[in-house]
Length: 94
Image (cartoon, rainbow, N blue to C red; front, side, top):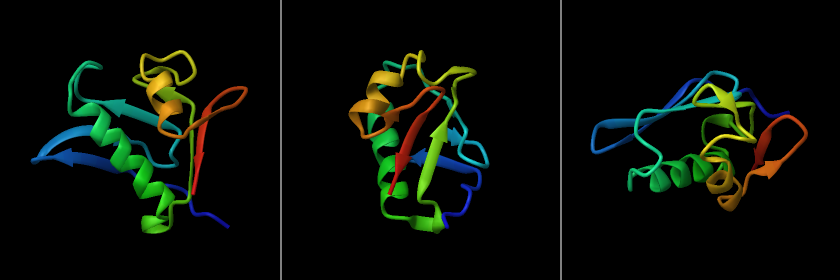
């Protein structure tokens, strides 16, 4: 069985860009949606899950920046990176 995601912070050059809450149900960004560093940070998070690092093999994002992941500004980017749309969340599995 997959373990629940612990809290994760994605850094680039020491700057925090993403925070994934424990359990992998909510993602908070620390930069604007048009920041050029956001795409590589999200791609790194996807690769982290797909590689099963830290025992995390699945994310089920319900919230992104405090709103529904399905209607968030990042939903199309997350789907393009491999997340699947579900009835209430975006999911990513290893």
